[in-house]
Image 1 (spheres, rainbow, N blue to C red):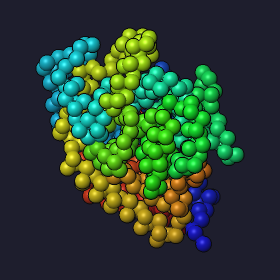
Image 2: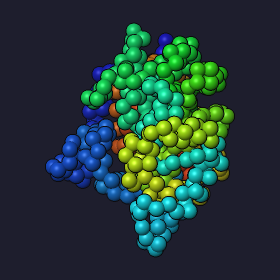
Image 3: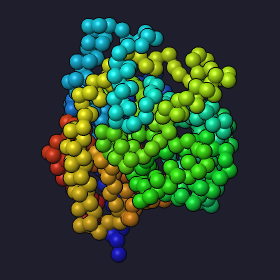
Image 4: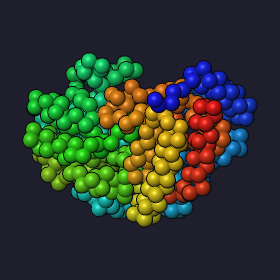
Length: 455
Ligand SMILES: Cc1ncc(COP(=O)(O)O)c(C=O)c1O
């Protein structure tokens, strides 16, 4: 009989944690209370996701440590939800930014420079695709690439997996409901059109359903992460990704792999680690060490198809719906060159993955010792625990296993004791500056939180 949680006790403990949080973070509280000109009192509405009634105010961050406005140091396993996977302000990044902005000068110019080709060549070396364009975010990389996929194939739709997340891309906000019907994702804020009309959706790891939906012949591209990472980590079952590639080949559908989060799988992401062969590829966040940037890559063949299709009248140079003024700016490129060239290098991933394994083993130990029906999944430098055992095999099951009360308690218990994981589900990421001591600190605090709950 798995251990169950006493809900009353959970609520009492959470309420005590909230009192402690409010007591120990007066400056953060004031910052929030005084932000009369900010919509939602935060710079971006999702910052209200932080648990505790108000978010921690930010003072500074170095390596794997964030210092809040009240002077508390926290071990940062959130790392800006992957944007800071290179660690906060690593020295090579600082050098490159200082040179770009202060010495040579010029943040945005609309002119190409040598960094662009260097970064593109490095992306080819790591991920295999040979033609690259730059964006300011992973969202834009996905958005623009979907246009190019429709242009190249002449097909109107996209296929995604239920409970995927690829940024605020309209076409991707579709799920399968309890009856297996496609529908707009709960909470989808006022979409321009019902995304069911633009998108087919199936559960991850369900090849049969994928083949059925692709058989309609109207899907330009399957857009997926190699493993879902935004509804907990949902790993692909053996043969699944090979099956997706084969189904795409059979039906003339493009395969777009989004490695924005799964870059944690290694220096060439899951694409290299699992030998995936996407037609197109997107990535963002971590590439520039937090400086806004993103990229999409095309195979030679797809680049040629897009060029040929565009020649028939689609404008991919000016106002045809692809691109942005600041995309490919020299600051982003300098940042990407520094991060790829000197920070998130091959050797760095070895240590990051070892620490993620230690992190996952520790959490697993606590779960097993207490007989909890939870599980832990790992993807290279990233680990995540989920309130389900076995680990969910698709987005729908994973969504159903979320437990907001429990999550909030564990997150706040950590924040009150110097440990930060992502405010969205229970994800922890290692950066090159993460140490064994940091992981031990998390383990001690997590174990104590669970013990206190079950006492
Ligand atoms: C897989 C994936 N793709 C794209 C995005 C969008 O990234 P951004 O919000 O930086 O555009 C995210 C964000 O979490 C993501 O997880």
